[in-house]
Image: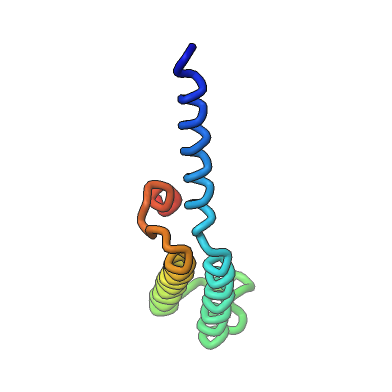
Length: 109
């Protein structure tokens, strides 16, 4: 019974530490991911409409178009990840917190 308050304080300290570290994830990273998603959508629409304007009405994708859409999707994902990591790193640097901690690893996975 004597150690109970100490354990409670330790638990509270851990929760507070996790909370402050989790907030080091930047909101701008989500905004940039959304912008990258919109840009990727525009890119894919442009690729599809250049090939065949009637493709949305039951047309099949050619292999060349499919490959270009895969490249567009991969580039969009990469840009979203890099921009999100940049903004998170920037916020962690401003707060002088480590970027790669247990909570960030969990969120990344």
